[in-house]
Each structure stands twice: as structure tokens, then as C-alpha cells.
Image 1 (tube, rainbow, N blue to C red):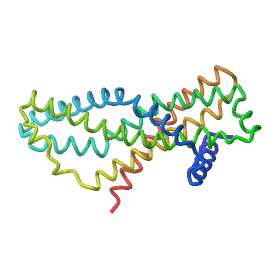
Image 2: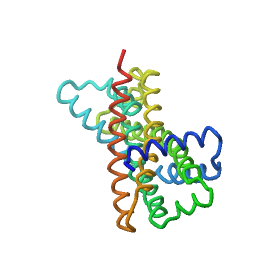
Image 3: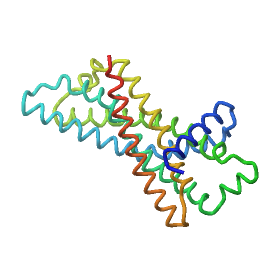
Image 4: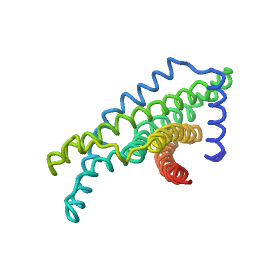
Length: 242
């Protein structure tokens, strides 16, 4: 079975399990803790540096043309909300969490644990995939919000210490609209859905022992990252269509 067909099958079965309420709440909470809470430091540090570099580079270019920084913060906040925080949260989720999903399910696949579950009348999608999808969507949304706050805060510090931009001036919301907030939230939810579907599908397709698990993990990182980037471009274009 191809990756696309496996992803479609897993997604449809997981949605059906969620609609029927056939998932373990405790498993969802455990997966949310692993995917979200344990990724906060990783995402915060990364987006903190992204915020620092972005504001510094933008302010440096503005200084070379016209040293006027009144819109520096407004532009940085808008970009963080609608683009930087969601896509970085999705990519980092795929790197840290997606690899784990592919490795866990890949190991279960090559050791015939998934087949044993099916023979015992236990649905592996209902037990393993659906909770991970729901937990990943919650985690990605939370990480996107936290990442945006950290990135904006770090950028504000750089603007104040390096370019004398007061926090009140930097924290301007003149460019931020509900349009931007809905875009950011939609991207987080879509990325949070895409990463576990791709990663679990790669795990289900693992073959050939430890080597197969390694290939499945690598495949999960590559495909999930590409999927996040493609969905980001698609949503950005779709949101701008009048």
C-alpha cells in the first residue's frame, strides 16, 4: 500500500473513531503531555532566536533606509501570528514528535504487534493513531501560541536594547486583524493533524526490522516537513483569495 493510501485510510478511520468517541481520554492526555508540554522548551528556545534574528535583521534594514521604527513591532507581531509561530511549531513538532510516532509504530509493525492487536479484535488505529492525532492538534495549537509570545517578547527586547524602541511602541497591534488570528489558528490545527497522520502512516509501512524502522523515521521527518510547508503555502494563498 502506498503512503498516500495509508494516510487516507488512517485519517478516515481515526476521524470515525473520534466521532464515535472510541478513544481513551487518559491516552489523549498522556500524548498531549508528551507532544506539547515536553516540547515547550524546544519550541520556545527556537522561536525565541527566530524572533531575535527577525527583528534585528528587519530593524537593521530599516536603519539603512530610514531610521523609523514605529511599525517594526506591528509587522513582527503580524508575521509571528500568521506565519512564523505556526509553521515553526509544525516543523518542530514533526522533528521531535513525528519521529517518535514513526519509530514507535514502526517497531510495533516489524515485530508483528499490530497484527497481534488485529487478531485480538483491537483496532490499532482507534487505540494508537486517533489519540495521537487529537493530542497533536491540541499540542500544536498550544505550542504556536507559546512560541508566538516568546518570539514577540524576545524581539521586543532586541528592539529596545538595540534600537531604542519602547515596549509600548513595539507592542502595536495596528496590523493584526481577526483574519490573521484565524489563519494562524487554522495552520496550527492543520499542521497538528498532518504530522501524526504522516508519521503514523510511515510507521505502519515499516518493513525489515531495525533498518526498516530507521527508514520509516527518516521518511516521516522528510514527508511531514514537506507536508507542513505545502499546507502553509496553500492556506496562505487560500486566505488571500477575495
